[in-house]
Image 1 (spheres, rainbow, N blue to C red):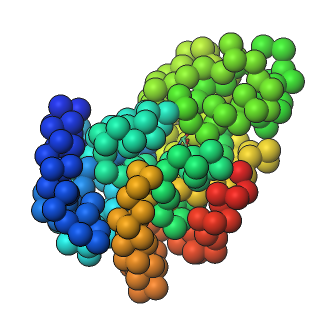
Image 2 (cartoon, rainbow, N blue to C red; image 1 turned 180 degrees about the horizontal axis):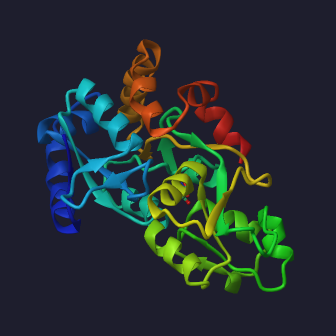
Length: 281
Ligand code: 6CS
């Protein structure tokens, strides 16, 4: 069962959670979650990675995998809070959430800040542009080289970092809070490119039904990224327990049954590892 909550309750449970956790022994954090009956997950509401319906129902590949693993760990529910990508790691460190299951891609700097599980959701990067790609923007380097092209991306997200690292000046990299805003800004001509992972842009295009837009994918000067469930440094015992159940889901084929209907490849996640991904980028 996946539910959506807002900040206040999450903060209160953090205090209660720390109190309960103190008595437990070898896996204090897991014992605390079992005691409270739910794990607090951070999501972004970016389908198909994570999604929140109008009635508050949470879905998406990330929460679905988290639900399946936590159930097997004896934690029956996950309760989701929506967060910007750039706020997920600080929120985790401040104990606002127990884990991030939002497609937070593994990268060197993030791997130093959190305890990632083994890989779960992999995807390449994409651009959403006006039909015909009038400014010929096919890579992050093309945007940097262009005189005035602007790119929208999530605040603290991978695509923002890719654009800045490619040399796009800060004033031409626009922080966009969510998919619908990015779509509207592109349609209104306030952006030349909106960049998200391929499956996120594909879902936006499918729902927008707007023939004046097109997706450019994959973007050749960006790697294929994979996320993992991100745990607070210090909660490695919980992360390890999560990994044991995640590996079983992968072995039995249940992992593929959960993520592939969303468009993700189980083989892609199973062909790599946290160690490789954290070392690579
Ligand atoms: O990990 C990130 O920063 C990126 N992950 C996803 C699923 N969407 C955009 C975000 O920038």
